[in-house]
Amino acid sequence: MDLFGDLRRMNKRQLYYQVLNFAMIVSSALMIWKGLIVITGSESPIVVVLSGSMEPAFHRGDLLFLTNFHDDPIRAGEIVVFKVEGRDIPIVHRVIKVHEKGNGNIKFLTKGDNNEVDDRGLYKEGQNWLEKKDVVGRARGFLPYVGMVTIIMNDYPKFKEI
Image (cartoon, rainbow, N blue to C red; front, top):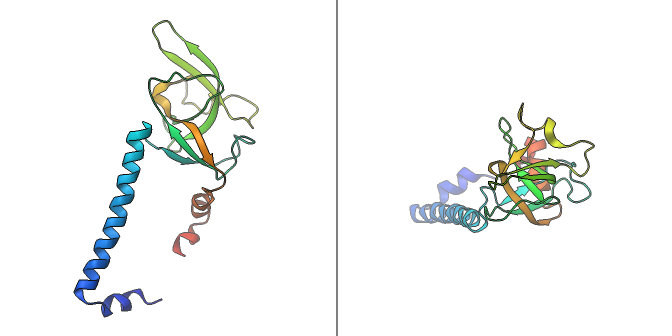
């Protein structure tokens, strides 16, 4: 595959058209992503399950669709995606306990379905409960194993070159 040879054989108009076409594809993808962020209220409306901690509900490689409407109260049994200070990768786990205070402040505890203990060991030091600000979104649907491509590309960087 001689990419540069193909580019040299194109006249300026063809090359300009190819660059413009590529820019349109990239900008369309970005607009769709930003639109999903606005519609779902989540900073990351689509995530991939990276571990087996939520089996049998979700398996490694499942693609989750999230929403994060702030008016919706968090309830025990819901599956949430949250970020913890000091960790870049969001975690997908189920809410097992909810504490509501009279002022409307809600704190909750999570646990992976396939884990023996709750997530207090994953939270930042000194933190025993999550708050609404920690939530990236709540699982509303999923496509099984569609995210395996992402996992393979992260686990085996040589596949990125193919």
